[in-house]
Image (cartoon, helix red, strand yellow):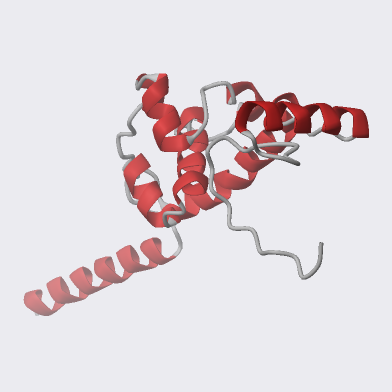
Length: 164
């Protein structure tokens, strides 16, 4: 009789534990991976890996209710690594010590920050006088006619237009 009661009590305790787990009453301890400070590297390393210097921080800083929020340098450099190399998000997230879904959620904010800052760094000659001046400079310097702009050593595949 005593063994039967013991089994009933243990079974009831196990069922109560499973119910608590199912209802979220018992939470498992969260583990946070150590993240490297990517900005601890020099500018040459940053530009060679991410094609971008360090000045994006103010555009991305925001308050968070999380105790382990993703730092601005990690957001920026991981997103820029994705854009610069074309690697998979999961690979870059692993490299940065975050999960892929976290990186995926952080990327749009980085893109928006880059877009907001782009007018400071990207200039396009919109009027004919500026375009003619730049064309003359390119032709004089490199013998390359009809060029009105260049992109920082980045090769971009351009599909030839069907006409003109």
